[in-house]
Amino acid sequence: MVNMTYQLLIIVLPLVWLLIASIQDIKRREVANWISFSLVSFGITINVISSIINKTYTNLIYLAFILAGFAVISLILYYGRIFGGGDAKLLIALSPFLIEIPKKFHESISFNFPFAIVFLLNVVFIGSIYGVIWSIVLGIKNRSNFSKSFRKMRKNKKFVFLTAILLILSLISLLMFFFNKDSPFLFIFIILFILPFLFVFIKSVEESSMIRLVEPKDLTEGDWLAKKIKIGKKWIKPSEGLGLDEIKLLRKYKKNVLIKYGIPFVPVFLLAFAASLFFNTLIELVMLLSKL
Image (cartoon, rainbow, N blue to C red):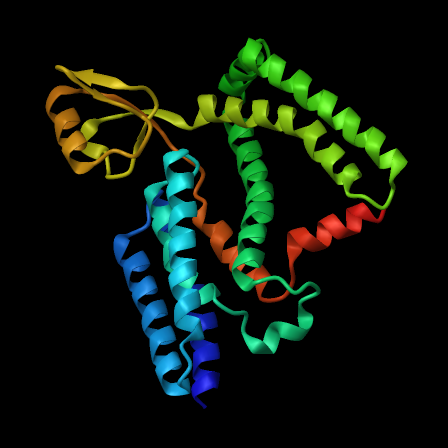
């Protein structure tokens, strides 16, 4: 009975909390702190109680490692300006629920990978598709500004150089595939060939559709500046989200601020968690392409 309750809680709680967070992220482009804080609290409590009842503390060791690992990943993604503050907190909050895959789903998994790794791979795979679709929609909605940004981006010397390097590497991968057709080099070729065009496309969408002029009174903690701002002798840099003290300064001395908005990414966590219960999306795709 205890194990059944544990299995149910580690499935239902993340799905319900992620659904609420996804709705918030789409509507308001932010996730309330109570969602992340309550989710991580429930996750830790459930694992501690389960370990005490079952008189085994292996899961608590895994819990410490997975919390630390996801905290490091989240910080890297946050300071790399890939995740917002809400995304980073929510990823950490999910980690206690990723210690082991619910037993009822074990037989449907094709490859024996840790559940946390399966989830992260699915986040990357589903997130890539989701990001492209969202970017296409934004590009169509703002097609006039997008066209200008796209033409400008194609002429950027850094992007031209990057494109040349990636295309050369993609051709090398294709050549390697012909020498060894059981290898995943065809998959690598496809990724490297598409990547530079995809990168230019997404950057063009970002410049044309994701940067807005905002009044300081509408700023919220974690918003990203599009450009650094100097107030007196203090520089406020866009390397991380705005703090409350910085927002107060901007409200006092600035009339408008350029803010960069990201794609609402929390729905990807919801889709990736649900997908991870049944199959290893990215791993199965790689294995399929490597056999072509």
